[in-house]
Amino acid sequence: MNSKNSRNISGEVRERVALALGHIGGSVAAAALINTLINDRNPAVREAAARALLGRLDGSVEALVAALANDRSPDVRAQAAQTLGGYGGSDAVEALVTALARDCSPVVRAAAARALGKFDDSSAAVDALTAALSDDSAQVRKAAAEALGWIGDSSAVDALAAVLARDDSVSVCVAAVAALGQLGDNAAVDSLIAALSDDSAHVRKAAAQALGWLGDRMASTALIGALDSDWDAAVREAAADALGWIGDSSAVDALADALTSDGSEYVRARAAAALGRLGSSAAVDALIAALASDSSASVREAAANALEELARRGDSSAVAALIDVLVNAA
Image 1 (cartoon, helix red, strand yellow):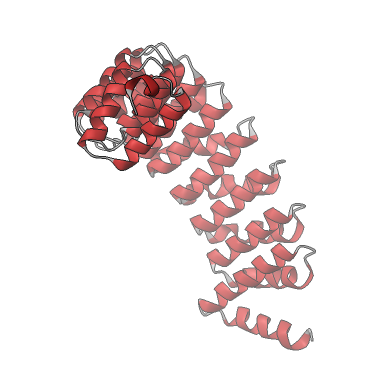
Image 2 (spheres, rainbow, N blue to C red; image 1 turned 90 degrees about the vertical axis):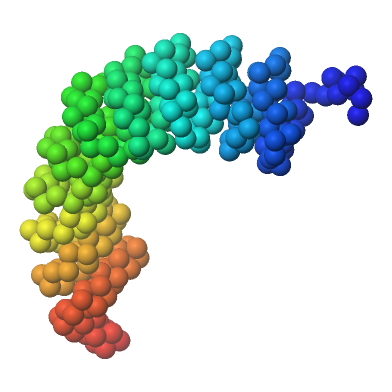
């Protein structure tokens, strides 16, 4: 194809060509993509070139760093940030930290935050993300909280806990709660217990889930309270699930009550599953009653599975109960 005809090809086609060259790889393709990223007049084509450079080492980092710092289009800068997250090295981290702190576009700052979340061995990334928890944009604060959770550095516990106390964005608080659970540090338990009383059901659900991930029995009482009285079924589900993972036998009665009387079949099913994980013979009667008479097939199935789990652990009463159902219900 001659150069005159190539200039008539639409931007949409050139976007697709850029992505194809990225899939093909090699130094020649990388050089063409870098040239496109730097010089093409169409921002959508430059964005496609930035995306296609993922994993192409020949000068890609330098070109992406330059695009992140200088390109006129926030979409191109955001894509450059995203692609840099797939590279290691101090140059990528430095460029992303700078973009997170200084770029005028919250879309770009959020992309830089998410990219920094892939650098789990960088204290500079943790420091920059911690500072970004105070960004003016909720989109950026959410991305920073998520990224800190991915990195898993427990030094971020206090900063994430502070978000729960001050941030008025539900999405940011949910992200901070999830990150606290992902960090795996029981220093977050008190903050997560407090979050079980948040006005937002989304935050309360996330807090219950995070407490389940941490597995600290200090949370059992608060989770039992949520299972018993939270108005939102999704929160009660998460509380039941968490209690099963924590493994505190003090939760058996509350879970049995939920299995018997909760108005949500999903909560009852989660309660049955949690009782199976707890491995207590005290749950057998409630599980048999659910197996025999619950109106929901999913709850009956969960009760059967829980009884099987108890039986596999050597609970003779669960075995006897299952045999009784099989023989005497015929």
